[in-house]
Amino acid sequence: MNKQPHVAIVGATGAVGIEMVKTLEKRRFPVGQLTLLASVRSVGRKIPFAGQDLVVQELTKDSFRGVDLALFSAGGGISREFAASAVAAGCVVVDNSSAFRQDLEVPLVIPEINAADIQAHKGIIANPNCTTAITLMALYPLHQAFGVKRIFAASYQAVSGTGAKALEELERQVEQIVHREPVTRQVYPHQIAFNVLPQVDAFLPSGYTKEEMKMENEGRRIMHHDSFRASVTCVRVPVYRSHSVAVSAEFERPVSLAAARTALERAPGLDVVDEPARQQYPMPLFTTEKYNCAVGRLRLDRALDNGLCFWVSGDQLLKGAALNAVQIAEELVKPPGAA
Image (cartoon, helix red, strand yellow):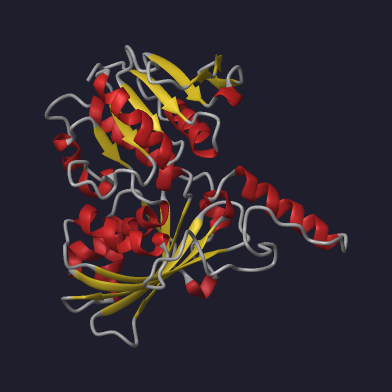
């Protein structure tokens, strides 16, 4: 790929798209030219990048002429409609939607785990689900040390994972409750303020939601672990930003806290925050706008053989989306043979 690629961001005015622009700038990605694309209603909006105000253009199937790299974050429907046009124009697509995650021809990548898979791409590379990405940042180093068999997990997912309108809904409902006004809802099926919703995404015939199944399906692909099993309950919580996950993991080999801590401390992109005597543990409040995920509450599982419990938090707009996409882009522009 061009060492200073022409980059396009599809969905540039969305929450993740805006974080992609910021992340490219903060990480000094070698952008030769940046094109911002969105739907017609966002055309003309200006977004700052590297000291300039870039004007958002309308996304069309002709938008990718001369573009080397496109970061997509506008939903699965848009990805399915426009990714092929981008590839046909000679562009490499990094897609943040679920459209291609289970396509065996498309690498599904967390660079800290399976960056080598990027080399097998045929024009499209998929970003994983945000909750899966955050969980695997802590689970994978433990898998390398002990060999994970299965996990039982519950997620605590921030409303920003749904989008800007969900953030507005939480803010509005909090204000309505404080002023003793009737609570209105538009985004979620129930009040989210001062409540938790044990549903993220649509229900499947099995009783699990689509979101809950992503942990197992995507985890198997990313870890190259076809027998990995995950039983997950995904919960939406009244937090603005950063997802958290409580995990009980069972491993093939005996686990010790000392060995687990060593594996986690050595893992890239992960901070160990685990001092319970000082009330130090990961929280969304402190992982928001941070590149690294944080893991803590480490303890041996009392119900599983060779089991370990842990709690992991991470900014789902970054490691769960924008940052991961930019990290994939960084791998694409590395010189051959570079570490």
